[in-house]
Length: 462
Image (cartoon, rainbow, N blue to C red; front, side, top):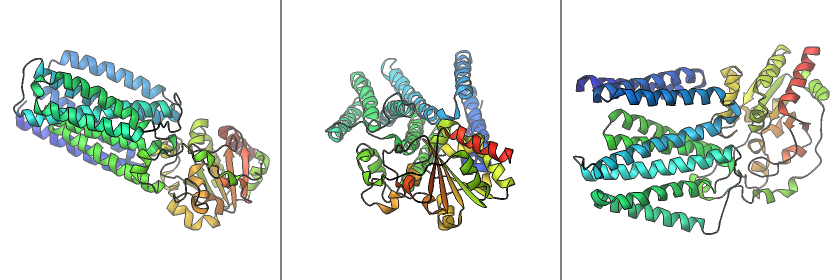
């Protein structure tokens, strides 16, 4: 394949990446955007293999094995486990970039095949190993937290900031030593790799589960930056473009997540949010008002405007299809139905959007808090399904609350707030929720799917 054809193929792949990413920004075009981006990646891989004349036998065998494992995992993983799967994808993306940098350095040192620009290549290798290592180990910790294999709360220890600073300084020193003397720096490289892995673990461990959407988006950005650095290592233009797009979009998404919580990225990464939050807002206790499914049905049957507010509890109960059916019954009964999604609801960015899209909820019924809050007082019933921190009125009313200042959905201002939860326990942030004791709140205790199914059955019987 001639260089001109290769360049044209890379340009076409980059264009597909850009348009695919733009389509991912809107719910109604997200699926097509995913297909367009995948087509761009397929084109980029095909052009690279044909241009370099590589031995396709082993490459195709590896691709077939990876595709088999990936397809099996994608088909078997439940939608509730999608956040941890995304975390693993981020981690393996960082690991792949790390291995590319490692392979190039080994070829340079062990096989004595020095690149044309040694300083540039050495810097690119250091960045690839550093960012890829932090992404891989940090993503594994995020996966373990999301899968509840380790505690989701922040795991703090005294002097952690000093330890992380010392690790970062050691990484800078090792990287500088490798750049200055790359041809005889394998012992330094052997030190750089475990330091990067250790920094990833120590950076994510102190972050609580409530901040996982920010962590996931940030690690996604890291994986893109690692891929971009790997592109500079092997001088592959399309890899540089793809990595830069992922890195930039991840940073933008991280900023959106932080803005949705009214917190800085530094506070998320270093604040240890949630470690002591459970001790706060003890004054939120009161007397909750339980309600049965039959009485809840009477409440909904008379409603003319209903807003669903889904949260992680809906994902755990796998209640999205039942929620969609209840919404249809309410519409048939003459009610206006909307689904209000907070940007940080769930365990990853867009978690609730994914679940509701799976249940075929119309895109036009998905709204943001800013679209609902100004007129929430006219809503007859706000149905909170497993959400907690994103509807906590203490974020507006209690300056002592760790959530104070965070933009939330004002469900407590609706005429009636119906909360579906298993218990009165606080959410992932560990903050007590005074919403449960508001005079207009009714608690429908139990599994969310069973509760919603009972409401649907009541509509059918009627």
